[in-house]
Length: 346
Image (tube, rainbow, N blue to C red; front, side, top):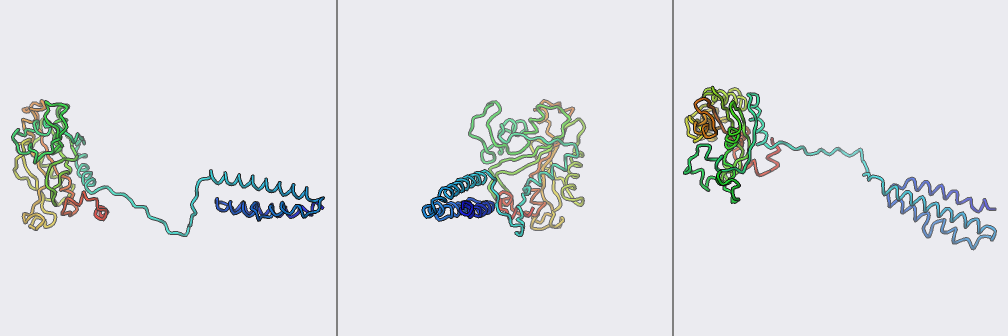
């Protein structure tokens, strides 16, 4: 009698185990609970129907129903705890096409800077960086720039309102060129020197297709006891051929810089018209690329060098200017507007 009364519960337990094994989400577990432990479940129905059973079966059926209810509740609690601590897994559909990840690129100015430095490092140049907030002493005084020179005015230099930590070295400013780093290096090191100085510089220029108030420069300095202008010319010609191609033509024109004597500007044959004249070069056939010259004796004396025993040369170039020539970009502002459509071309 008792076996017949409790036999249906065996099938109920098997069905519960199968449903529980397939329940992998909180919603599925709740559905299992409602089906097997809810008010309309078979367990609840068995408990409610005890009064209709013969007296000799009530105790055994009630006991079995309560045991199943307790066991089902315990197993549901275990499954819920396991599900709560298990790492979340998103459904994986292996039939979906893959998603390509966007890849970053080096900025064209950075790429050009790296290309410039790579041309000089094999020649024995050491890369050195310096502060962007500078003293007048390094930015002007030690570079043989007179007190009344126009570049010292507010319309040509960004002066900082912060008080100078070393008043004897003048006001603080945002460096207008990278040459101050050369002075800093020469003050603490003796020749021979062969250094490159890359970095940002700042000038209050009006923003237009060829000017920006912030841009990048690379300065070079060589000092020893035998360097000549011929060495300067050879180094720069080799650099221009390495950067722009072996067929690159260059010329040196006399110029003036306070910190070099003699001084020159360097031009290359226009990359568009190959020297015949076009709108890019203003019908001149040549494009200005950098300034250079032999280090002025006053600069050498100012850092404590014996100007009669050592000499050197220096050069400086604008990185954006070279990037524009290399890539045919006609507006410097494109480099700083962060238009992804433009930057993805490099």
